[in-house]
Image (cartoon, rainbow, N blue to C red; front, top):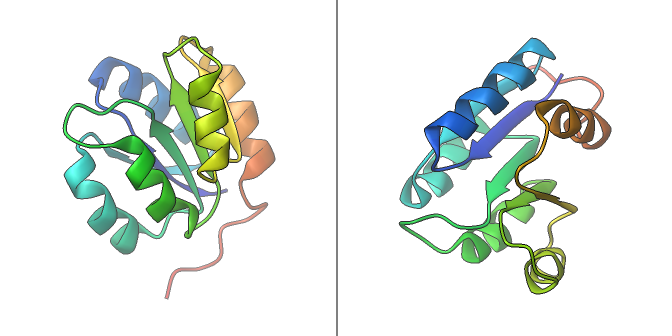
Length: 122
């Protein structure tokens, strides 16, 4: 299964996502602060990133360009407009998911986008 970096500032949402993805066999690292994401991504080496579109301490779209260089990024958004998904895809996101979503829906998307098997870490 895959190493998944979850960038989500709301702990209740994050805990549900972490629980579901770990039950599916993924290794999940949760980061709640935008300022920590670059360092975490460097150390954790995620194979897939789930990125909240609105973080209180930073610009998610700036993070998007940094993270897409590492692999697929799914933007999770509570904004119900056409602009946010279009902007996310233009920034390199492979998909967007509108909140609220069912954990099963997100797990299914992760399974589709994540590598089939996680290679051994160096």
